[in-house]
Amino acid sequence: MPSISGVSIGQIKLWLRERVSPKLYAHSLRVMQQSQKIADDLDLNFDKAAIGGLLHDSAKELPGERQVELAEEFGIERDFTDNIVQEDLHARVGAFLVRRDLEIEDPEILAAIWCHTFGPSGIDEIIPNKGKQIEIRQGKIHLAVMVGDDTEPERAPKAIKKIEKALRKRGLEEAALKTLDLKLFKILDKGYFIHPLHLEARNNLLFELKENNKEES
Ligand SMILES: [Fe+2]
Image 1: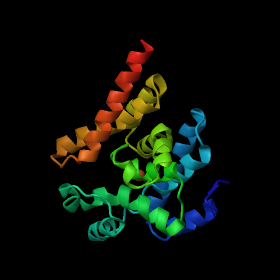
Image 2 (image 1 turned 30 degrees about the vertical axis):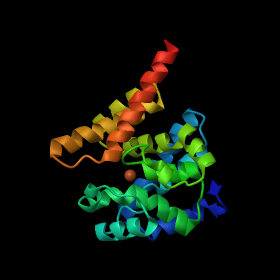
Image 3 (image 1 turned 180 degrees about the vertical axis):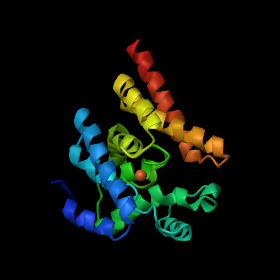
Image 4 (image 1 turned 120 degrees about the vertical axis):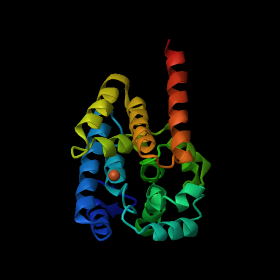
């Protein structure tokens, strides 16, 4: 059974159970399993993926105003759209909440929670230590949880198929890019705001993939 920073998976589950609805708790367990499976297939740290997956939505059901209050308290940099679409803060607020309440300091787990909606952007904000920033940049746990969140079995089958195809044929980074693209299509279709962190993460991932392809060819 995984444990991290001296906190057991049982304690983490109890903490989460008190904070989310049974429906979101069940989703969190499925994302835990799916992230674990991806990590296992790719030889990544199994326990970190499991805990990141389990905790990714810790702040999701907090009322929007409370999320803004907590973002203020934690010193999270906000875009103006965060004050309008307040629930978009839940990933970033969740990472700080987990660090404060569960005393989990592992940078890869915190990055996984932080990144799960908009992708890997702005994550330096949560880890002030430079050495750990490098650890996040090189790590892949946050990508495994992003993909795990969007391919858990209760997600739309069509989207799962597209992301899993990218994962199988082109790897984890491409699958993560696919999750960001599918979310963008939805946002555009509904006429919602696009968060700058979403665009930044999407462009960075695309840039890295193109650079890697150049090196390989
Ligand atoms: Fe989720």
